[in-house]
Picture 1: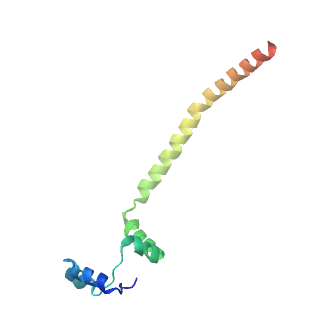
Picture 2: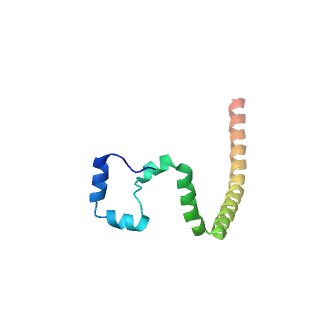
Picture 3: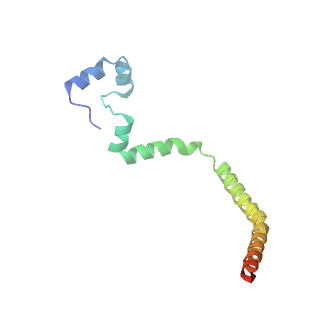
Length: 101
């Protein structure tokens, strides 16, 4: 993004106590708030963020979690199935009883 051109804005920025350190570190005047940067350069922002985060992701932990979730889902399905069958049986009995009345 471009440096703001309004003299008042530039003067305000240059009065900030962090200004000298910023110029020393980055070497030029480019100012942009994070939310503005996101809208102005979404792809650059996304790539920068992903590059910073990806090394921190533990693929083995994700695989373990996914396997645990699959296993839990299977066990829950097995535990629910007999109850579901009993429920369907009771439902049939009730329907038959009301039909006969």
